[in-house]
Image 1 (cartoon, rainbow, N blue to C red):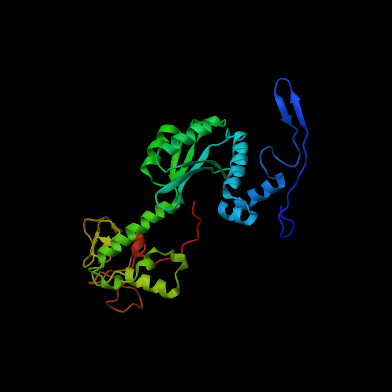
Image 2: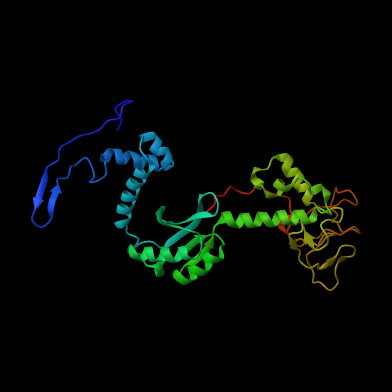
Length: 319
């Protein structure tokens, strides 16, 4: 290590021993690894730095070339993995990450129970799962004992998990599921923009977590999801799903063909889920004491989620 701002070197004459069957051997020392060129404390410092920053930055801090740092890392990682025991691995999480710019990826496999990295390999195709299964067997594990996997919705992962981890139940992680859902919601908004110009500039209003919306944003979202002006079209709720079939007439009350106490819809097909004794007026809205004639109710209990007033959802953590 450096002595204040000066580089420090440790010099020692080591005994050399001659063996008839092995030839000349140098006596080992307790403060350094053979052929390393660094003391063990200096190597430990490099390992601590490398866990928190790029190797090039570590090389600049310790005043060494990055290739020498990589040799130290390769030695200790290989020595650690050689004695690794994966016999208890049953739940595996897998994902890819960018190793550099462009299409350069590394797939990482982790033990979900013990929160440790099991295997890392280049690429993000299905062959990475085959290499992981082989490495798992080499370290005392059994691919047939893996009961659960967590991954994205990559077709390559899905096919090879069935092949190399035959007893594993696949779970798609929440991040990628929510990403696909957000893409679909945004596509619906773009399609409906032609008939609904007030949707302009509301992209993030639909994609944000409703628990984090401000009062003003909650009001805007409620105003956009209200059933008024004939939008969304009958049988749809915010363009996302089809409502249940109507079992009553909005102008004449319950349908004679329906059984007593059947659910009653509003003017756009969103049904109430419980029996109500309140009469229905000619506009299809329920009359109640203190309610002005001709007033309308924007949403009914039991309607689809996009028809109801948004409620703050509890905060959740992604898998």
